Image 1 (tube, helix red, strand yellow):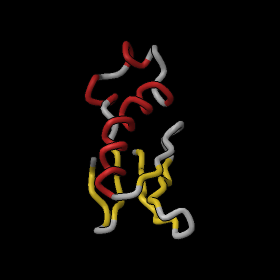
Image 2 (tube, one colour):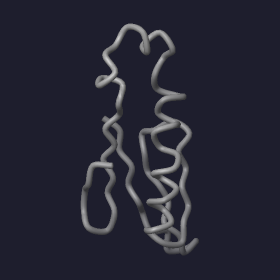
Image 3 (cartoon, helix red, strand yellow):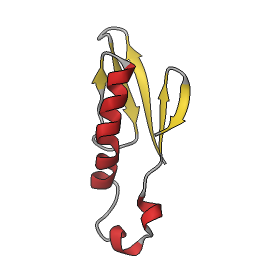
Image 4 (cartoon, one colour):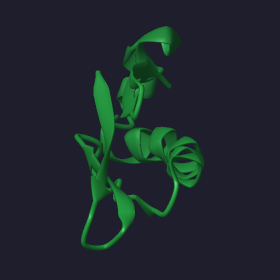
Length: 79
């Protein structure tokens, strides 16, 4: 399972990401913008950086679909 957490950076006045997805670094002024960037990029980065090409052949498709847990201001939600 992968996770993404939005953290408010008081000094920079932006939300920044904490995540175990390689290559995902988000900075956004609003949570709405943060979530848009997350939705546009997280799955692609997982497919590019966490799944090996041979896994497309050896694993079932449903096992390749990543689960992403996102934590915004209101707690956790699956993305």
